[in-house]
Length: 299
Image (cartoon, rainbow, N blue to C red; front, side, top):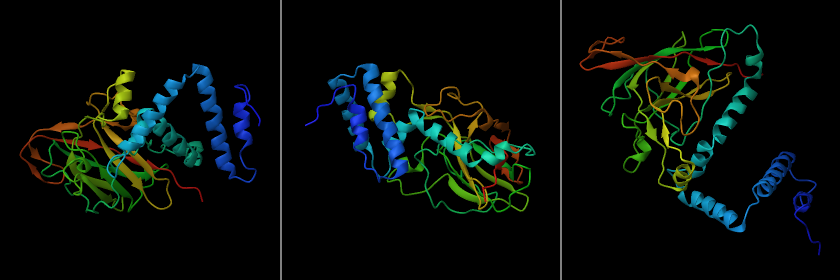
C-alpha cells in the first residue's frame, strides 16, 4: 500500500482522476483540490478547525428548504455570486464592450438574490403593483435600447422587490401569494412605465449559520434599498440587475457586494398632486427614471 506524505498527497488525489472524465469537470475539480490543499497548508489547518468547517457547511445545508437557500446566501455574502455574475456578463457581452461605435455600454448586472419567483403576472404598462402595500408610492419609467441607442420593443421587464419594510412576499404567511412583482413589455419606442414603491433597506436572513459567520467577521447583514429587474428579449444578452435608491443607507457596505455606481438612481420626491400618468396623488410620492441597455447576443 502506498503511503503519501504532505508533500505529495495533492498530486496523488489528482492522479486518481479517470482519463476519460469530462474535461471541464477535470479542470474545475483539479483547481478545487489544489486550492483546498493549499489553503490547509497556508493556515496550518488543525483537525478541530476542519471539523468546525464541516459542521458549519452541514448546518448551511440543513438550513435550506423550499423557501430559503442558505448556500446562495453564503455565496452572496462572500462575494462569490457577484464575481461569477460579473465574469458571465463580460463573457457574453465581449463584442458589445469592444465595439468602438457603440453609444452606450450594457447595463451592469448584479446578483439575482433568493427571492426571484418565475411566472409573475404580465400587466399592461402603467399598472400599479404597489397599491395597498407598505411603502411610499414610486413611478418608474425609462427606455430599453441596444448599445447603439436603438429602442427594443416588446422587451420584457420582470420586476420584484420587498415592501416598504424590506419584506418580500415569500417571507409572509405561507409565501404562496405574489405581491410587488410583475412583468411588463416595452412599447414600440422601447419605453416602460409602472407604479410600485420606493424600496427600503433590509437585512439578509441572519438567524442561521451565515448570520453567525457575518457576526464572527464583524459585519452587518444589511442590503441597501433596491428593486430587482430582469430584462430580456430574444436576440439580446439578458441582464439581471437592481436599481438602488440614492439615499438608502448601506450603499457603501452592501452585505452581498451588489452595488454598482451606475445602478444608483435618484428618487425624486413629489408633493401631492398630478402624477405623470394623470393620476391624482393625495399623498407624497417619488419618481425614478432609468434607461436600460442590452447587448446584442452573439450569432
